[in-house]
Length: 137
Image (cartoon, rainbow, N blue to C red):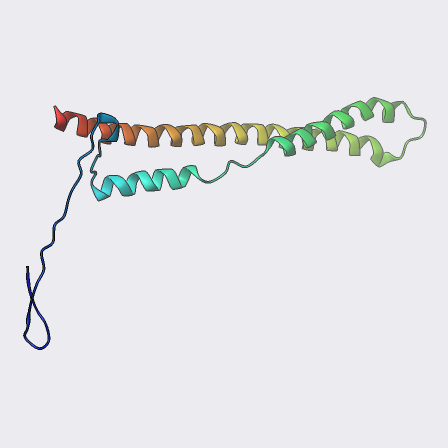
């Protein structure tokens, strides 16, 4: 390799580059297209987002619903209870039970979607790996 310096002197350099090839199948490398790499990075970045913990919230709501349900007969059996007491327990039971059930359904759906995202990422990686296995045959 010849290179000129500012004062037109010639500098001669010999560059020896040694490339070591992997010695076994377990150390083999796979070169992939940038578009495939970007797709995998996007899939993995989606997997990094945590699943919201709805279990605690709906457990509390089911506890409120249960407590309200047990309080309804007691409030009904009282002599001269306030007018709002029985309706309060019934409303608390219905609202907390409905929201709790909704959160159970949402939590199940979120877990199902996360599982599908993991499956999609693994599928993308397997597709890329299969393409290279076909080329190596």
